Length: 405
Image (cartoon, rainbow, N blue to C red; front, top):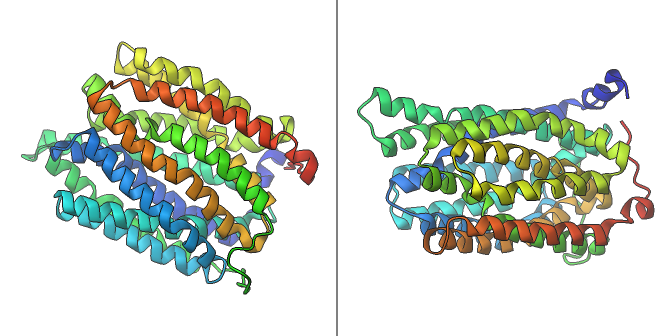
């Protein structure tokens, strides 16, 4: 494939798709910083893995309970307006945890964050799918993941800001983390501007609430999402805490690790569409994911943070490069007027077990064995790959799916 043909798939994206990509890139920067420090912020506030897991559990279970009704709502009202409202609620969640780190306020923040996720996720995904349908789903989602990763990398590098604040001011880590969280709060408002400028084409239609044309597709994706969601929740969201406890590092090294992983991994997202064109979308999903599992198993045996980082980076790249293809496959198989609802169902299937397993993983890390959750995640991932293959091995032939750039 020529470079000209390769990049033409990405340059064909229209104005509305580019506006959404700008918004998600801004959000990616803020999430990069937030993801690097929020667990460490709670750690400095005196909490351990149990409370951190509790926050993630409550956030996830709230999203799980509400995402289905909000997904159906997004197929019946403006998806753009729903995305804006949900984003504002997410910013309020960050503001609350900045005001107080009492267990009560942590609980309120987690609830609002979960509500925000339930509102935004199905609406944004359906809105974005609408804007990239003509240019190509695989290319659109690949570019979205590429830009998101680069933005997360930059945001993760900002994890050094608290370190510099501690070094050159009288603030300790707790105060430095609190000051740094003002950045993702402000960027949340900035990211709304491009979304407001999008011209939404979708016009809602009235139909029975629980009747779906793509019910079988939703069931299959829900099953595999439940497996991978449970496995991931056992350890992946808790890795900043894992690295901090095991190797004695704080936000600077952890943020740098996430940044390097994002920068190196970003081109893999652009390569996902050509990979799917070459070997098929199903193999393009499963082969990189399978290769990543042994690397995860080796992380607990690392003698230093740098060795663990050297394993974490390729593991994350290989596991995550399938995400654009999974999103594209789901949207290809879903009718346009059911995309938000189907997104919410499959997200629910992932987030419910993910919420419970984060609580389990946090407890196990703190009270039984720090390394154990990573081994459990690896075992569940093997089951996920086998299940995905069994359910979707004939999907391309049955539905006439052919990836073209």
